[in-house]
Length: 97
Image (tube, rainbow, N blue to C red; front, side, top):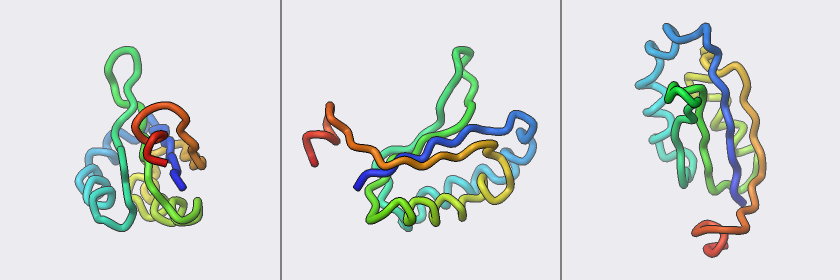
């Protein structure tokens, strides 16, 4: 199944973000989760306001466990984190399913 994590940053945590950015990147690249796509989401001014992760998982619980160990989640860089099952219907991921 595909899972999507949408995380919205806390604008008051920019200094904390800088401290944990490299740890966050290492976590995403750790291989603990089969991440298909990941990256920041930007506002109209080109400023990052959060991030999206799309992963191939066995269950949503797998994504929840991975997310809960992310340094940005642990240290409150993200204000909101929501995890969804995703069923693509158009595009490369849809045709691969």
